[in-house]
Length: 232
Image (cartoon, rainbow, N blue to C red; front, side, top):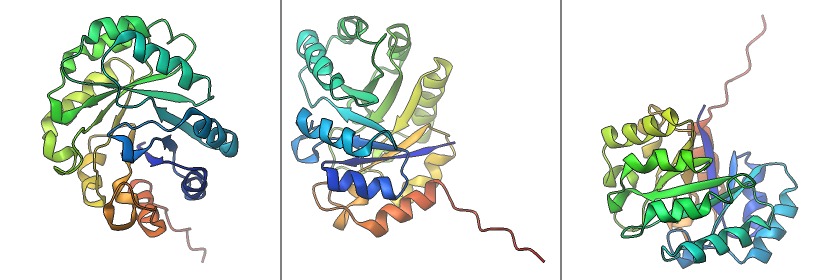
């Protein structure tokens, strides 16, 4: 079954999506980039406020592909107690070296590799994430003003990504300026979760306040509430 990931940047927003019963609360700062990181003190405060009532993930930021830098940032974020740590794999980096470096952390921490659909990622490297002990892989977009994930990759490419992830027994998520109208087509592909930020906000602006009605509509589209059976 596909779950809903909601990205938030404060305790107040985290508690709002918790009340909406989302499946994963994702912590990041949209104003700081595609995977902008929140201050680790804020992340830890949110983790404590959630109190294990929901899975929590957090990004380490839009960092250059320097193994030591990314390794250190991942270590620091792990100390906050989040369930998953999302790491962006940007173009033009030495992915195998980065993956190998991070493999030292996977026995203790659940790492999620984030690939960018609008940067022509090499999906054949997904097997390396599995060998290194990563928990999952996710597709997102780097440029948020060019349409949703479905504009960056067609259905066949998205299906291939999900097939490769599941073949390697990795969690797989889809995100990237997704809208309510994207949900039916993506649900058919059976990803483990769909991630949202802009579509949950006022005016579909990822840096704006959350819109409670939008959260409810998207949650209902992913996990419809079945009406109670009528008793005669």
